[in-house]
Amino acid sequence: MLLIGSHVNFKESQFKGAVLQALSYEANTFMFYTGAPQNTFRSSLNHDLIKEAQELMKGKIALDKVICHAPYIINLANKDNLAAWNFSIEFLTNEIKRVQELGVKYIVVHPGNYLKLDVEVALHNIIEALNKILEQDQDVTILIETMAGKGTECGRNIEEIKTILDGVKNKDLIGVCLDTCHLNDSGVDLSKFDEYLDLFNKKIGLAKIKCVHLNDSKNIMGSRKDRHANIGYGTIGFTNLLNVCYHPLLKDVPKILETPYIGENAPYKEEIKMLKEKTFNPHLMEDVTLKN
Ligand code: FE
Ligand code: FE
Ligand code: ZN
Image 1 (cartoon, rainbow, N blue to C red):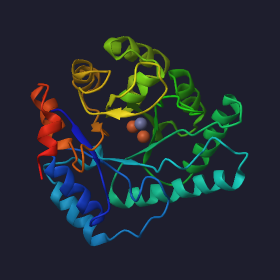
Image 2: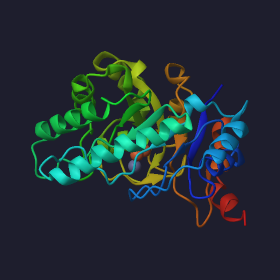
Image 3: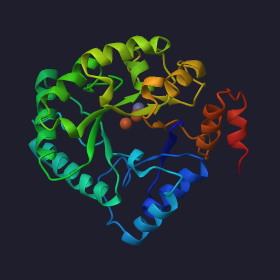
Image 4: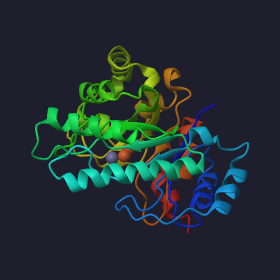
């Protein structure tokens, strides 16, 4: 069965609100931030809502395929700003505890920005940070996301991802999240996805892929821009995204949409429908806009 969902927010009734949104999109998985993605303010978890959420999920959403995403302002790569680096480690350590309370098994993390550092130094800092975070007693796996290479982002190619994974001591708790928009923007040709998977398998191993962010891209291959487009409305295109979505080697991996809202409305119900039916909807924009 296709595992498909989107990112949802945690604003209204926390985990329960996230589950209700996912169900309204007819998703069978989802990804959430435990607070705003842009900041690190986190309110305390309500345990009644967690129980209600887990109840609502029964038979519809597999908790062990649900994904959390860490906020993108944390930076594990720059140890030169020691206070910020330590804060990032502390924050992620706590975030993992919160995720564990929810029963969620995966948290996606952007590797970080190297800024003025040499990339090698930055990658070493990331490894050191991850090893500190993974020292705690926990069973949440950190998924390093493949990045577009915008600005000074680390994790722009298989080699950098491999370096990070190789340096992490706790191998059981480290994996990878592929983002199709980021792959395209970093220079991967998704019309030759098999070649990419083959290379990934040789260097890292396909078993490490635990999540796919399924997004189209507003920019051409290799642009290093990172601007997501709706499914079939970007440069990657519906056929290539469908191929990733249904790839037999990624069958058990949840696919998560992080595509842009259309006007005020989330497009996820309609995009999920397109992917389930394997049929491109040329009226997506109108259909989503006209919803309310
Ligand atoms: Fe991300
Ligand atoms: Fe992503
Ligand atoms: Zn992105």
